[in-house]
Length: 82
Image (cartoon, rainbow, N blue to C red):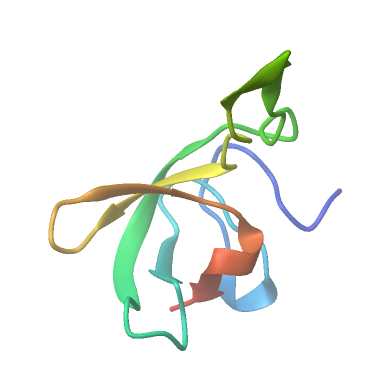
């Protein structure tokens, strides 16, 4: 099983992130905040769309609802266990 998996409750302390896992977003930066993963878009996330010119950048793997109510989309390198 990969170290990231979709669905169920993850174990962020062991590096496994999943829906309903409590995490820190942007750890070690001034933007660091706690939150909960609310969606895992899986391995298919991360493909940019180019049609002659860049239309949209790569999608992020996880949607995280921050403790302040905001929603952010992040990748693994922007998450840390809480």
